[in-house]
Image 1 (cartoon, rainbow, N blue to C red):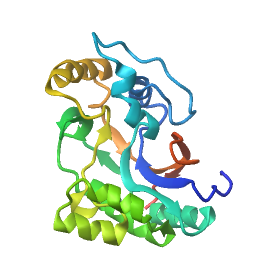
Image 2 (image 1 turned 90 degrees about the horizontal axis):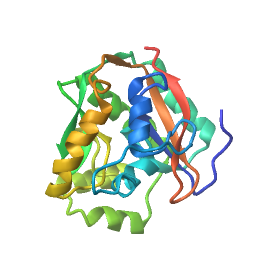
Image 3 (image 1 turned 90 degrees about the vertical axis):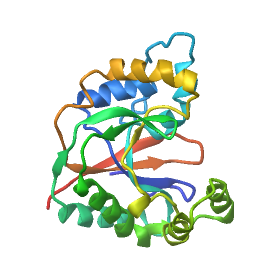
Image 4 (image 1 turned 135 degrees about the horizontal axis):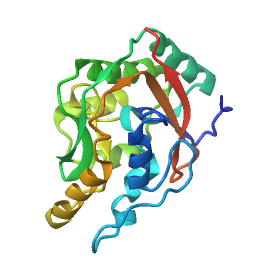
Length: 231
């Protein structure tokens, strides 16, 4: 267990493949960094494109799907861990549908290929369970979020939870690139689909909530704890 994070640190609850899952190895190689160890990983080459630049943003966050978006702690690390463990204790593991590479508003991401109500229920529960631990965002962060031209409902969610894309606005996705131009998309989508092979579509269980931490603004996110679901 890690010690208390610095005041500028952030915590997030994510889904991340287990280290023994081929998706962890291949997805980390695609992004160029292993969030479990923090080590850089050699990336594949892309014809006439800079894969390091295309993956820079998701590389910093690590291979993951967001459940509770990153936030600074209003309470202690121990209290956040206790809230996460209590949630995990009442949540049962469940099957994750096969994943596939999809175009998500210009970004490439792994998305589920079939409806999975348990995924949305877990994300909602993660958002609510750690609300007492979340320090509200400052005005600069709120202003940055609002530049995305939020809908009235997203504005409500931003005010309530500090992030506009939660609850019914949440979508499961494992981000693989920055936003791409159509020409880039035509090259990168088949390349990442081929690179990941059958790993995304393999059967797997959602059996843990993974806590990621960011030591300071701009620092990479790292896996701090995997909390098993025990419901």
